[in-house]
Image (cartoon, rainbow, N blue to C red):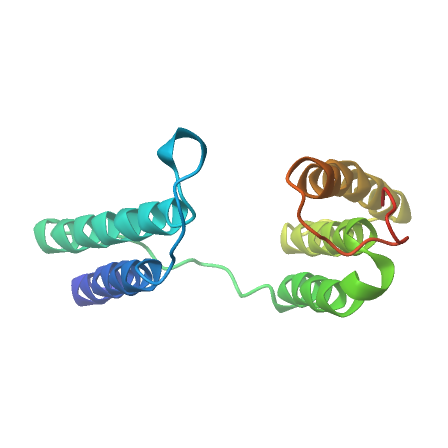
Length: 162
């Protein structure tokens, strides 16, 4: 990529931050505990995007040599396919089988894709381990969001723990 490409990427990142800031002005609500309201996180992300975009543009203008070298390997389409299938399956199943099961399946399919992308041959044991790890990671997330924060995530059983 040349210098001009990075300037455009930086400008796009900064513009995205500005647009997010404009969107944050639409969020109304009283500040909660510690003075932090519902617009705090969008404003924080918008500010970081603008700063990073400006830094990227400045770096692109001041750095004379190539900022990045093109990779010397072919795209990993099969790996990308496994990760994409995981995302699509998660979106299709989350309301039917619940958050924990669909996210565990997403984790297992994405891990398989990453293994294939690293030129490994995933075994059934790897897939089972990834599925179990997906449950171990997604179950606490589900419990924290539903029980601690009081948010509604799709559950396998009505009012259930999974």
